[in-house]
Length: 589
Image (tube, rainbow, N blue to C red; front, side, top):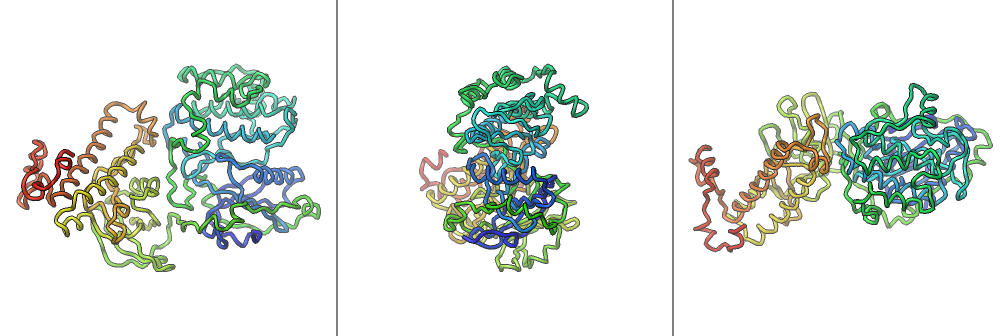
C-alpha cells in the first residue's frame, strides 16, 4: 500500500491548536478511503524540544499498539522534512464537556455510562503497561454515536509493571498527590484523575481548585474533600475510595485492578460485557449529521482558515529520532475492507447558486417552499427547502434532521446554506411522490400493503419518541417515497416543521434518563399528549389507507367545527364500501 503524504489530504478546518502544533479536519482525496474525514495532528520538528519529540514518538507508538473501542484510532503516520503527521479518526462529537455540558441535562445515570466506558479504556492502557497521566475533559472525545474515545497520548508513559515514574506532567487540577509531590507514581495516579473527572461531571466543579497553581497543589496534598450531599450514597462512596491519598489504598490500584471498580455499587446497573461491545445506547447522540461539521469544537479554532504553514528545517538528529515513524492502519492496507465514504457537507454561507441549479417548485407549505435542484459538480438531483427566517426559524427542524437523519425512514439532510434572511436546506429528492398520491391513485390500499406501511411508520415514530422527539404533524402529505418502487423501505417522513425535542426549563436538551426522572409532571403530560397525537395520527392514516376516506371529514362542505365535534364524539364509520370486506383485525386496530 502506498505510504501516505500531506498531498493526499484536503484541509477543511482547524479543530485545535496547542503548544506542539495544530489539529486539522481533513478529507482524504485519493485511495480506497477517498472522501473519508480524519483529524490530522501536525507537529513541526524544529519547534519540538528533544523531550517533546520523544513525546510525539511515544504517542505514535501507543496509538499503533492500542486497538480498543473507546480509544481513538490511528490510521496513518508519516513525516516530511520539517513535520510529523498523525492521522486520527475524526470524532465529530467533540470533547465531552466543553460543549455538551452547556447543552445537555445529564443525570448521575448518564454520567455512569461515560465513566464506565472510560474505566474500560484506562484498564486497557494499564494492561499494556501504559500510565495515561493526562485524564481531563478535553482529552475525552465523543464519536458520532455518542460513545467516548480517549485521545492525546503525548503525556502517556509506558512502564514496567509496578514500576514508578517520577516526571511531573499533566493538568494540575487532575493530578494525584503522588504526582504533585514527585515521590513517584504508578497507574494508580490515573484512578485519582478519574475521581476528579467523576466529581466534575456530577457537580460541575473541581474538587481541588485554589486561587493559583501552588494553592491548588497544596489542596490536593492536604485539603479535606467537601462532599456534596445531593450525590447518591453510591457516588459518594466511589469518590471517597478514589480520593485516597495513599495510592496503595486507592480503588483500582489493588491486585484485582478494575474488577474492584466494576464491583462497586455505583456501577451495579452496568452490563460490562454489553458496554465493551458498544451495545449499550449512549445517553446522548451529538447533532452531527453534517459529516464535516465541527459544531462541537471550540469556535476559537474552527473560525480560523486552515493552513498548514511551511516548516523550518529541523536539525539532522530529528531524522534519526523519527526513523520508523510511518504507519498505515492494517484495515486501510486491506483496501477491500473499506469503500469510499459518503460525501461530507458543511453549513455554508456561500451562495447556493455556486453549487446548485435551482429548478421548478415541487411543493409549498405555510412557512417554506420546496424546489428541485441539481448539483453542478455531479449532476445529481436533490430537493431544496427554502425558509424565510422572519416567518419561521428552521433551527429546530435542522437539528432534529442532523441528529436523526441517519434513520432509514427519515429524510436525509445533505447541505444547508444561510444567505441573509433565507435558509436553504438541501435533502434527498422524493422521486416516488406522496403517500397521499398513492392512496388517491388506488382509491384504497390492501391490508397487506397498509400493514407494511404502518409497521415502518410506527417503528420510526417509536424511535423518535424514545429520543424525546414528537412529530406533531403526521399526515399522508408529509410521508413520501424516495423512489418509484413503492416499498415500505423507501418511505420517508419528510417534514419536521412542527416537531419538538424535549428541553428543560433552561432550554437545555434532556436525555431520556433525565426526562424520566426529573421532569415536572405537567411537562411530561404535555410530552405524552404530543406523543399521543402522533399515535392518533397513525390511526387516522391507517383508516385513510384502508378506506380511501378520512374518518371525521366526509365531504367538502364539512366545516372545522363539525369535524372537531365528530372527533370529540369519537364518531366514525366502519361499515359500507371497503369496510364490508375489511378483516375484523383491521377494524379492531
